[in-house]
Image (cartoon, rainbow, N blue to C red; front, side, top):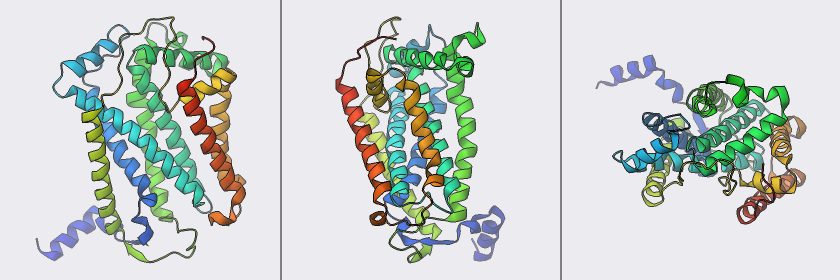
Length: 337
């Protein structure tokens, strides 16, 4: 293809907008975790679209349809494995991405809005993880929903739209399914678009020890690096899908409480053993803390050595969360909902 025609096509498609310079340190794992998360999210959406063709969002048939997918549909077990492990990998890379942003103070001016959209994305992903867990409609799913319903009932009128009584005649499982495949993705896509827009606007944050920015490279080189990293993420997800089947129990027995939540929520399980209202208080406090962060920490200092209080706060939070996850994994529930 002649160079002139190629340049014309690039210009008409807007591909030339990607030809800008960014710092070379963008081509490193810590600064590419956001791109890796995006790869996992794409796999999650694609595999979820295919899974939706086989799922029946009815309390009497939901669990049966999952077993049918795993046992009867050609490569259905692998498809569900890709969906499950994409969510697991996304959780890990997203958390590591936020920690990198925090410890490099990349949430500070002028990137406050990007931090806020990142927190909103985290909340949406957490809700997708929860609703995805419930859709299995096995014992773990039923108990997770039972804890959720207890929580929203304590919220009074604000929790009413999330209860079974809000739309009588329509199974709550069907409404959760619609939230999982439509409402939450419809919120996710524009927020993700804003997140990427502000990343393009403010570019990759400089390293704390190079506040003026380091050596530059074309953005196309960063795209090539992200492509290789994405291929690695895809390979890991496929390997995990081949080797480890995601958990799936039989249809729930109502009134029993014998399971524990997935590791992403087991820290709440541990707090619940200390004080049941932590189910409501802990997520709210954690969310408000993250949202307030760029407005509370107004200091322009970004180097981690000069931010001992901020770093100590996050280090303690991480240690406490890991401790709660371990404790929740080995402890026994001391009460029933």
